[in-house]
Length: 242
Image (cartoon, rainbow, N blue to C red; front, side, top):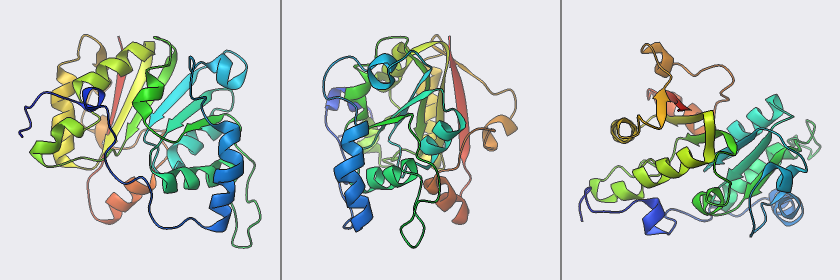
């Protein structure tokens, strides 16, 4: 198997990586049991702002939200927008629910107000993204995805032609695709892929500082913080849908 073998996450049609890590704390499990069913994306039907939030509003989609720090931060900044997040790792979903619930102190009490403009899918992001009407999204985020650094695993990377074409279809003209990574192999791969999609996306960078510093309104994720603590450089990319 080589990096050039045909395939990408759309055609492979399966998820890789862990589905669950260490046992959940009691409070996290309670949120999985009670809060997640209330804000879960329906299993069937079109995924629209009206269906999820009851009205027309700008719609954001985060592919693999990790612990939910970025998603919750953006949703808190933009309470009149709607946010959809998809994540297959149960522990990440549980951590995101803590943020959405308002956070908890050491005594278990809430430390903030609940965030009510988020909907979550515990599972495959591409399955839900496919059910979003074309041109319905204002933002799509892909932040610190698994780099799958071995060449034979390159087709597992979310930054590949199939997913990028799907993202392009779902974004409205002028909508924005944001991508972040601290992995140099994934960086080079992503730039190579995006160069094949210049008819769909305009790279919003005029100088090196535009992708070397986190833009305003881009909350830090725990993966980004960990990367910086380990001395890694982090890159931030913003693409506008043509």
